Length: 248
Image (cartoon, rainbow, N blue to C red; front, side, top):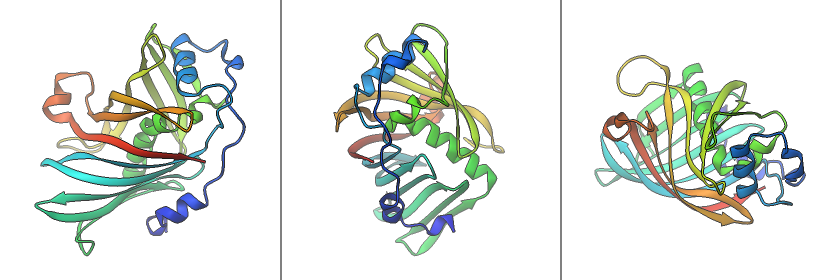
């Protein structure tokens, strides 16, 4: 079962990088896309297909609560985000995952008492949207030939591709030097009240670092309705700082 796969085993069996990044074939690509890829992937960078991250921050679950987490993103199979969240001083352990097209969420107080369990097609589709946004931590996959780029204007570019069979359209805001400022996409989810539906999702990049030759965002604020007043009022729910990044 997808929710029984161990994060360490998921990482250890991940495929290694295939090929290296070459900027010369990017001539027909929209300007913001070229700037983004050449800023984040210097020439000769191995084209990783998997990444493992450790991170910490705060997540809004009623109130803002501290968390620590590890995550593995494998482009061939999906992602696992495994975290510990502190609620009223007590640890809640769990994970959000999308593995081989199956989406699950499992959270337990003290690792014993279930507090939230979810699975099914809506969870899979929503997690595919999350994984699409998190390609900013695995920018090599955006250099693939099957990513279709469309210029929006001089600072915005849209990338269309699929995540575990789900079509996605990711919009990147890129400055004149290729630094990523924001990422947005329509994501399936259930923010606030109501049924699952497609709503704007994404966030702003507040810092970046170069690790093992690859530049990645290391501090972000993420949530629903980015770029609007609703983001600050009700949409933002995740503030994250990335501590370590390992590619393969």
